[in-house]
Image (cartoon, rainbow, N blue to C red; front, side):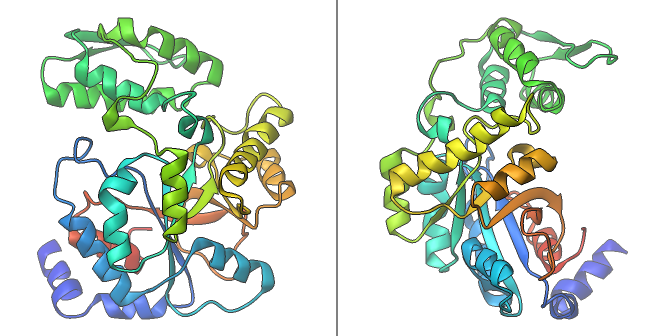
Length: 322
């Protein structure tokens, strides 16, 4: 039955009515990583995704959508923005030439302490330890009330599952507990955790950010250190949000208009801080399409990657699965 349905959607033009029906709503796509070390597979898939987007939709910079929401101007039918979170260097090396080929504007949200070399993302540290550690068994006990789990590490598949299980728990713990866990990560996996990100997890440099900006890439703020918002107090929230905006503006010499909540988490204090900082819009990880009446500080996105099958990607962007 699924094959029959997909044949109708993709071979008989069944997606077109869905796209047409939702033409007055705008989409925001979000990517994260493009490294072939992270996701073995050809970037030709990303090229096909971009071809579909350029043919079926009206790609716009996110800042243009933000200005439209702020002014009340009407967006063109099929408006779509592409965003990339965190600021990994594989965007420049692997993905940017493809987006540039199809003339698709991109907004990259920067974690500024990562770009400054002050840290590298905790999930990348987990991936590094899980894949390069010498241990053959790890024990996971982070969340209160959740029984300790034994994580076998004999095969690549087991290590990948252990990485996913750990990340699922770490994202839910307070920032102090997360720091304690990261300090013990090397012992947990019998792995060396370098102070700076290794090449496969490297950040963009500020020179590369400027290079991309001169080529038309937009940059938005994604906090300084990617904490879970809310934090302990509103002052910490304001520092994370305002500090990242200021740092990017210092390096680029131009205003930053859009913010991305780390992990997609937000509360009233975080949303208020974003508005007070002068951002025109902010994006979440809540899945869905947006209308002209959407709260511009709580915009929904569609999470995509070049790992997705062509069929699923097209269905998702057309408005299915959300």
